[in-house]
Length: 146
Image (cartoon, rainbow, N blue to C red):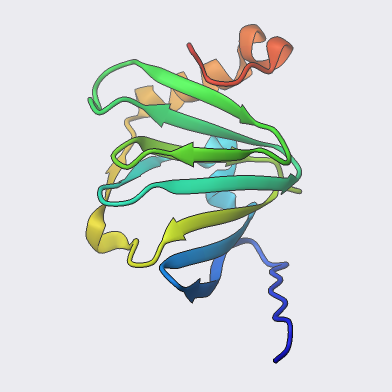
């Protein structure tokens, strides 16, 4: 028996481990995670998802169940902490170019049991505005509604 080593140096996400009911993914910055390119949100209807940052910076953007509401939450992800996204919570990530993180999901998490919605131009602008706001950048808060 040998130790398995998984690595990923390209942009985007891969899922090299899917056993015993768990999927482990390696997610690196990709163009879709650039603040200027955020265009959609996703939610997993049957499972939770966890993030563990180990390099760079990441902000998780969440929205309550009402896609038309303006109840956005930006959470700065700190290295070494695990962040749990509850099932059903709309979310996306804004990542720095050097960002690398681990995703943990239940086996079976897929597009078949997840929803996606395209953000309006106004919603994209609002996310950028909140991200760039003095409140967020100066205080680097975690889990504060803006």
